[in-house]
Image 1 (cartoon, rainbow, N blue to C red):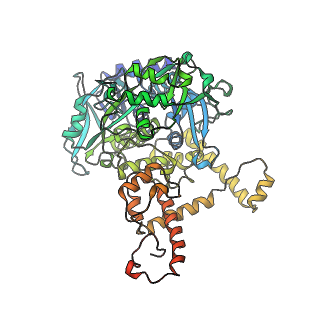
Image 2: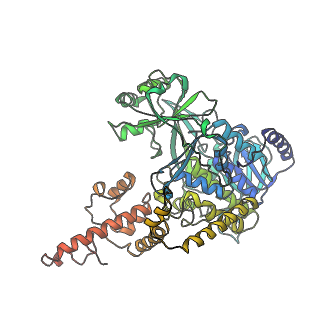
Image 3: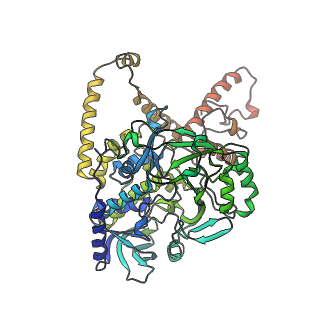
Length: 638
């Protein structure tokens, strides 16, 4: 079954009615500012909790737009989509409706790191989100630009120096009051667009930035610390101008796996899916980048860009002489455009065309829309509580790129949780938090509010120390029941289905546990069935985390060569460790960008090396004068 989608005509009638009814209504429980992935999830979640909610967006027809890449999910990101769906969010069902190429990334590895992913039809996705929002009870959509927040004295019985009580629109209309406000401004907060040496205000091509008064309110009136980040998007390529025979064909999975736990199949039939294609950059691409640097003011700016989705200029400068992947992705069933994933660029349009044509598959390519860069303000997320409420301001919640993240999935996850808590605040209910032990959403929020960011944050499975328990397949068992019983954002229909699944699984597990066989015998009795035994891994992983906490005083040698350590560490982690050179394992674990998995791997290396060296030291002269009692890399007991 595919979850039912509201007819668009009905949604349009609903929109007309709600817009008209707003003229006589100036008081809401929750106001959500922004109609992107964070805003749509926040508005829908607040309404599901029971709050009268207003979504304010600059253009109603861009609600749910895929501003950059036409895809959803991936490694780490797919887990977020599954969790948003388990909490009755929108993006999973929208992905199932709009998907045109489904695949499970990392399928050769264990289920804990599988990454559900789909290429999307841009138009179908936008239509689904708009249809769902405009048919959601207690939710009104208003087109407008927010000039500033209404700020008053705080409630003395609650922590905080300020209190937000609503918004003022830029068109001079009367203020609109609310008990809580969720800001999901994306790249629009003081946004600037960059193409070559040209700069113009905007948060997305064709759209204006948010009102400067909003940024001023955050900085000057509320005293929040803000920073500047940047991102970019590739040019869109005319599909018929590309020689796809020069690229590697990558077909989708033959049996699409839906994102939503409510769906048994996707809207797109398996045989109707579209393929993707893989090609690579050439030395000519690097030459064009280097020759045009003086024409590219975006790449010369100090604002931090995304490490894991960098522009081609950044890739060339950081990794000279390398061949870089370029994925040619379809933008829709009826679209005549391709999205060149990996070719985000901000050079002048004529130079972009020169660069594109240095790739064999695109030697005659035509550009439909040039790539461009965006710079925007963000609020340092350590100023937020785990409920995503600004600590110093009662009733103000932030979600999405305003918190320093990048990606649709990260934005949607934050939006849902901010919307839940904004509604609970407005309805005088206690705020709720998700632990990093129970969800990727909890990992995401905990990383943001406790560690902050130095560059746009992206989710990976390596950030979750309990990832063997936080799998894509069990997100409903982890979160749906809690979402209904404790949070109030899950429908009874979804809850009842999750309960049935839980009960059937428990019955099956009880029956299996009554039969004791070795793994080899199980494989013999169940040939052809891939079996993973995860319980022992989960138990071991929990002990490892406890061990890290106990042994955080373990010393790290000051001369460790982190770039050559024979352990699994990302380049980002190696760079951070090499730059900071923490003296202890505990100090390393608290560095921004150091994942729990990296700490565990480092712990194992130190302990293993210490055991080997200790055996050597037994046969050597007394070392006390050299600091034998110091707790260093070559010691085992602490």
